[in-house]
Image 1 (cartoon, rainbow, N blue to C red):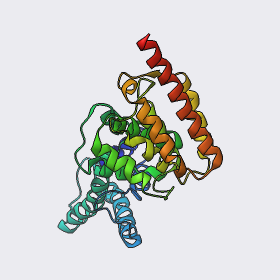
Image 2: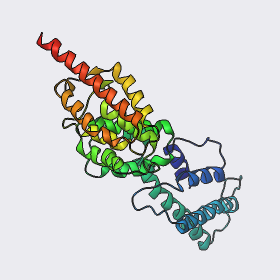
Image 3: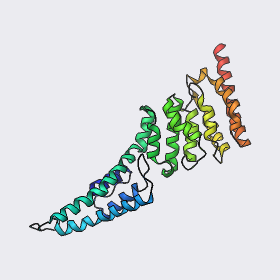
Length: 289
């Protein structure tokens, strides 16, 4: 029981101290995964109540240990009835099995491994959707939401269509800023234009331009997000691929500016397009001279 609880807390990035009391370790682990989302994990309140009852039963196992165990300097064991053994085993397994089911989703949605995989791993159809659900975006810290959105956007801009579908298009199609938090959206927009090396890069078919505008649709401060993006683009080098598609990027930006509801945001969007166009024209002129 205690080993399982400690593994849960370790996976959540909040390990228990070596001398922490059993009841505190168990309670902290239970709270850490009580609302963990994931495939086949119920959100029903009755399930949470049943799990809490299992936790209380697991807490009573300490009393059995005190009564029958050897941890208090006993030289001999007391006779242990079969019912005591079976009650201990059943009580332990009930909570442990519940915890391990949820621990699987905790591990699937672990933030840093997910970001690392977005850098170099592979994704099959639907796998990112599962891992984003397990990551529990609404309950991540704001900076973690943004970091994850940035990694997803950059991978999508690198032409991984499964990531684009699960992590960008799904967000762009939704106005729900709880399921898809604002910080995640901000990271996506930056990642769709700036790669992990700080260079301007847009995907091969320039899908990311329209998607970026759609992702920003429910954001209450679209203009500021785009102003911040432009500041980063001003000092960004150009990837080798963008040199051949900047004109298409500009054309798509002009076409889809209407998707931004704020006039200030449309002006900031147009300013980015103007900057890319002027820089691209200068590159082209320099290359032909």
